[in-house]
Length: 233
Image 1 (tube, rainbow, N blue to C red):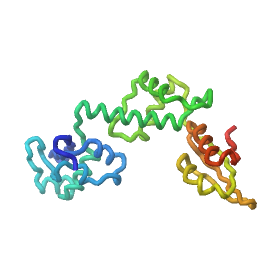
Image 2: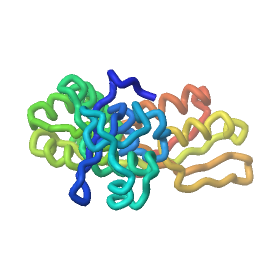
Image 3: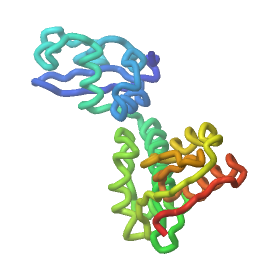
């Protein structure tokens, strides 16, 4: 549970009334992105819904029932967080925007390439292009949900394309256990089979920007005893 000193106001106007709760801004943001990932009891500074939190005026049960069809604090709080407005201080908003901006840059670095050179863009280049394009990152929207909008702003400035790379792998079956978790961490296995020689063969799709890192991992784990083939070349 967040302390009262660190909490901010989340509010929602509904059915002619205003409802407010005191929340941890970071956890409230996480609920908007992944509703099941956070316990609401940890988000609230106090398990109460107010009509005016500054005055400490509690919202009447009849108002909650009318607006939300329930008087359960957690159900009401979830609706306020998901659909309402969260009041941030200037510093809180700056920190949250900066963190979300880093997440967007990381996604673009991992998943995009320069279609001219076929190489990934360095994070610094993407950051500079975002600055030039005056990209405004929403601290309450998921990074994944903002990527396509950011790409539209970047394309007039730098050659950039989101691309997945299909790669075929063949390795001795004894190395399967060492590799399978690592490979799944990089991308999606589209197809796999075992041949008559006991070798494991798979088709995996990974973000183009991770190609060099992926190859290094495979060669390190297998000491070079693996067949790798890019299928888009």
